[in-house]
Length: 509
Image (tube, rainbow, N blue to C red; front, side, top):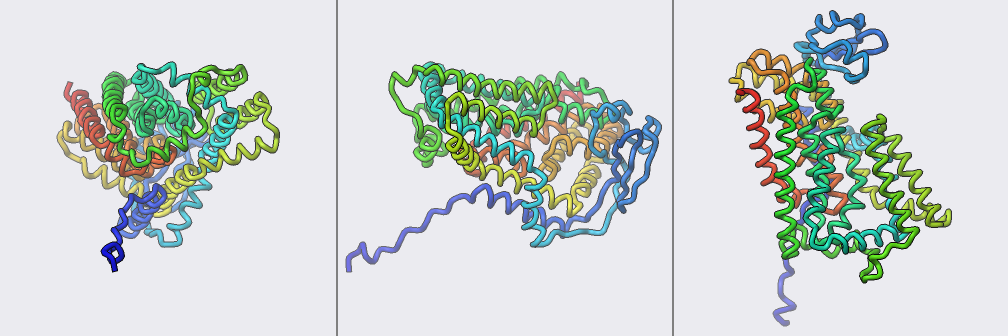
């Protein structure tokens, strides 16, 4: 028998688990926590019609007149007007009302039911993602997108770095102004092929989009879903602390750009330096499979130009609708669906083929939709297990009596930890601000610093937390979580230092 015949088979290389497995492991951890963390809740106050309704730990309710005196009587230092005009639209935690309740540990059946319940609760986002997939499928079928990328790639030769700067800056602007986050899902099928055609890898495109959104929302200036609602819940004007957040926005965005550019240049010069070099062929086939090369392909046909104009207009309308018209997922989903039909008419796609291409496009993003549902399932487990308020209560007790400099930095890390379990910016704001903001008065720190600590902590965690949007974004470009962590951690450490320094300067100067 030859040596080859008796040679032992090589060990199979272990690969990092998929996003679904990572999220399910997180969900299992949260379910386990419900068996060991005491269950408890804060009483909640909600504005309903012309009265305030307080929901107590035992489920009973009580009504109070919708007056400033009622708010003062329960220790909520917020203006009545903020409730009346809808600035504070979610139930607010009442300070000093934490009550332990009978635990409700989440078992195996609850764990498996959570993603299903998460699907129900996130159906607006899920359907938005699926319709975007169908929209992209129709545009790809027209050939306009392929022709446009060829043209843009040719025009950007030698100027590729500006692509990183422009995309990161514009998305950061969207993040800081109206909290652009889930909406960025729509940009990956558009921008990833452009970055790859420019000689970069998919991580560069991912970073420009996701880091841009994350640094923008982390340093929100006029974002109604974090800055304004958190300031209102803390009982202060949202303009307080604006200068420090604006300064960190500028510095942090520049830091993100430089970091991405440094990696991008290294990959462009030597593709083997890419963290996802082993996936290069697979990713290029996925995003550039319909593209052809040649000088003739840099010339757009008339109907391609019209389709690309409709394509771009759809995104401009979406941004305008969300930022100025109060649009949300229902309106955005409708916009993409209508745009799909218009583009199909322009391209003269037969009805049966339109349906086939739309469904195939939606199918391409089905995995992303499932990740969003599983992530929401983690929140379901937290809520059903009643440990969110317990974690907040314990966090508040930890910072009692600290030096103000140490206090504000620890607060940032506490908000980061809490946001792992409560990834919603508005949800975390109304839950935590009435509880945490009064602690600032005790140590002599202005309340706007608590709002900044909340934003910075939540924003920093958003770079890496599996319960946020990162796994859905990674699924858009076929990048595993471990590769993302390897890429982003050095930058995250820099941003942590910048954030802590900004808070310390704000406290002492």
